[in-house]
Image (cartoon, rainbow, N blue to C red; front, side):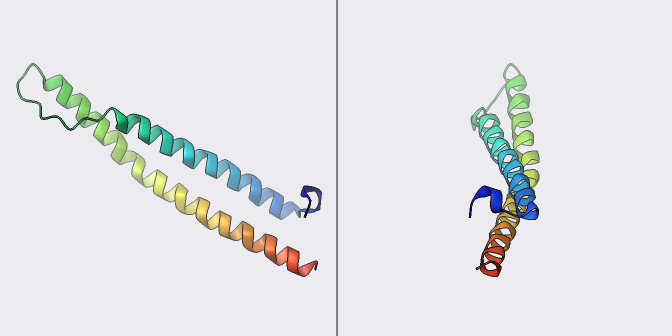
Length: 95
């Protein structure tokens, strides 16, 4: 199938899938960059208390990203399956 023969519905689904996939990958990369700064060192003493707060804040950021990443990942999977199903259905219908 050439791109010019795709139905408008399939074209729209492919565009939505592309945008959702880019957003999902962007969140995964952001989580990796933020989580890379997280350390598992034991911090003892008042002089290092600000380091403990920074590590706690980084940990909270990573945890807050889990739900959007999961929801967007599931959405990308479902959209991918629907897109492939519609593409196959259209292909078999026009066969």
